[in-house]
Image (cartoon, rainbow, N blue to C red; front, top):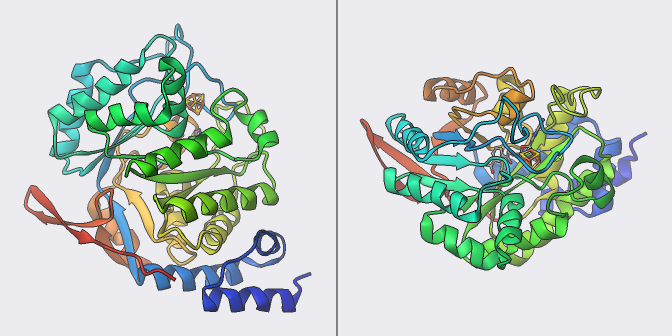
Length: 376
Ligand code: V47
Ligand code: SF4
């Protein structure tokens, strides 16, 4: 049963902008109903971002699905010799970048598998080819897991690998690969890939080089509430040190075609609860993203009242979740995104990767000043 005194202490903290503890987070997970969570998260969401709801016009590129790792939650990866295996050529990469340009995209989001036979130079080249084909496109590429792999391949430091990628045109890093930081759960779902400390060290190194990055958390598989709260506290600690994270994206697990396909998909209630608790715990993150591709348009739209202020974008050519059974369309148009946001009573703002307002004039676009979230 909910302890009313405990809840009112937490409410007081939220009203006054005081940080919630690990135990507060666990209490919210285990004892507080969804509508109370939503009401509290909405206070923080509106304090930071008012009535704005952001989206981004972007395109995805997953240049290969061949991967040396075998994360049990992944339906995207394949073996080198499998008939599903593919690897993009330079021409295919160029074509995708030009397609992004003609669709008016401001960002290309690049992640993929860790190919058994491709050296670090191949990954640098992916960035360089995009940069040369369409210099105006912001390249958000390679997760912490990929940077860890590059460092392993080259025997060079994270910093040195990142510097070379920045030189080739890397603009920021996506938040993938964080999964769940708890060691026991991580060993069960992705035993061999970068461990939690490496993921954290890589994002720290990126922030120190001036790169902005995102952070994610994969939920709804084997983890328990305490693992989710632990994950959020660790991200909050790093953000205290560097301030380099832009957005947090809770990723709902899609079991279809994975080694965990006996598990049910997280419920809508769990999706909204996780968004709300993330908003409440991550007091030093400006933005919480409801990634509509994974949540579906209906939950993503509702999430705008439960702590989220961003829907990601008009995401086309997304494979990772569609391979794992996502039934959402591969892309939404700007009109569709606007309609979703406006129906939720929010004001749509197109942002670029670095949260600057995008100003469009026919087929041309420029960016304005950064849309700064209020600090609590
Ligand atoms: O790290 C893989 C997840 C992530 C499944 O930074 C799965 O803006 C659910 O991080 N069910 C990669 N999730 C994608 C990612 C991302 C997505 C959108 C925006 C941003 C951003 C980052 O996808 C992986 C893993 O956690 N994933 N398989 C699955 N079956
Ligand atoms: Fe490979 Fe990434 Fe899939 Fe893990 S989640 S198997 S690292 S593609």
